[in-house]
Length: 309
Image (tube, rainbow, N blue to C red; front, top):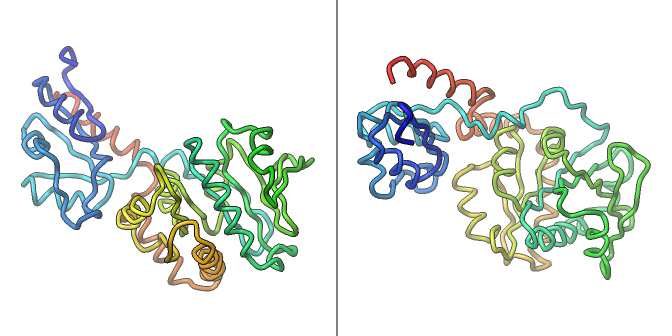
């Protein structure tokens, strides 16, 4: 790092402190911190000291509230130009399937927690009214990581009400079925599922943030961890705002799962009939995640700085 004139530090205290210690000029993107958690960001020591240094030429945050907060705290300009992790999911050209409701399932990506999360999501689906699946009713798409193949998925479902079936459809070669319930299994289709869903049923981290950034309401299902616990879900709601919903109750209990299924119906109806609700989704997306082009805006700001570095 010492041989470069300008360093880019992304993340938390370690890259910030490491960059400061080199004595070089620094640009930092504080993706790990947000004022939405507590209302006022309490940066760990010695972040504030480093960021006040004249060597930190540009500071970017993950949301507008944090930018305003740190501008006041550090007595210097802090910018919010968007989030680079959002740019990969913006896609307005994905055709929407013909159905009344479109629900996306996000069980997360870490194994073996993913398997437990998926089984819990299936229990929620079992509480949905069966008549919703009469055409053109509800389409459910499961965003599954490639690391769990069909054989492993079949083994996971053994002893369960659900079964795995192959399908001739190109869009979904595999389906999980039980009675009238049908779930399309889609791998490497995460961006597509986010864009074409009216509502996301989520037990995920970054994927949930990206859904909110696309103006999609998200319904959490708190699990038993190790990642997606009740505490994690509560912190996520503070970070991402009022378009993140969660049914009250003990995680995994049938009464909680039943409440979650009822909330699915209410939220789906709001996406079709409540224009103020959809407007709120767009407002929260812009304030908390920004708009398309965060990567290029940050890159352009750094480029303008380079001749002076």
